[in-house]
Length: 524
Image (cartoon, rainbow, N blue to C red):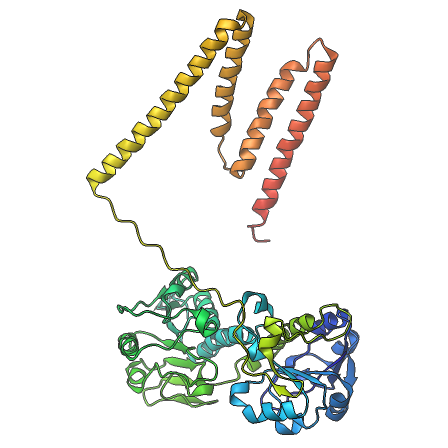
């Protein structure tokens, strides 16, 4: 099949749906790749870079649309672009079908098969195709960079000759993909980072990234992400009021607020009100990642940066991924080529649009002149977080003493029983075995006991525990072999020499492996 990527026509859009790297992988699937001249320039990919990997440069959009079987884009096509499609062609791009019903009907009437990247099911197998998460990750990172660009102080605390600089305090509202990316970036820059989410199960993720989870003293049965496509479910009015109360408490303390609460095709909930903005310190910054759907901040203006009367900067840009066009294009093009890989199961350049496949069916909006949106629920749901196990009751001092005494009695009984069993076996063997055997047997038992103590007491300073034990065993083998190597028997001398050789290989190999493992944790 012939796959083509046109230049994006939306103002300010710098991304491109095909990169030189993704084109190489598409060609390995048996496809031919085409791109409109200059389509990748804004993202940092020259026409020469495409030509170097075998991509054909097309001079005009009309030529591209008429000459390819699959069109890959970033933004949904407008009505003018859609008229350039012909029956049987496939479009792969963001589409937002719930908000573009008219466009969806026109695509179906034109016989265009539409695969919406924003409709890829959020299941484990489809993570490599999840373009929404890829772009949200970039948006969260870029939000912190934009905040830092508009914030007049350091993120990290410093002690200088001129005085002490306090670290910035960042609050991230929403711990989805964008929120976690913002948390990771803020903590890596040295800021004190707080994070809030309506799903208490994400607290461990937040804390593992070095941030502090903001808890609410409120009991509410929350839906898990399995029933909401991986997104947080809307909260009750009572929970919302408690949430706003907590944010009002935090507003005077935080320097930067990143809001990420947004469910596709729904208006963004207002979480940061006018009075919270008024309570913030001069020079503070709010970055609203939900600006395209009204914003989480009550004062947000879409695609604008405003400064309030109390000198708080509110950023409502909706093109954060496009502001990092090279990285965003690379991730988005990778998501698309994974979708095409699923559509090309035999890697022979032939598209097989299997509507029985959960991922392909979920992402397909129009097919065979029919509207296939909304899709049925996937057979495999998003994995819900497991409920935390109940904490064990703390024992009283008396109960702890009784528990320790019971454990000591059980261990003592086990040891006495084992010693008694061993003694009985030795006595039984002594009744029937010759005296010479018993002497050798006792020496054997003692050597096993001494060897065990020697081996298990080896320090693990330079080895992993397993490597330390194997090296200790090899050392004992070498000692035994060295004693026997001067034997009068040629066979015993040969076996002893072989034992020394093999044990030495094991010891030196252990040191070599340990050295390489330690080198993995050292900076070059």
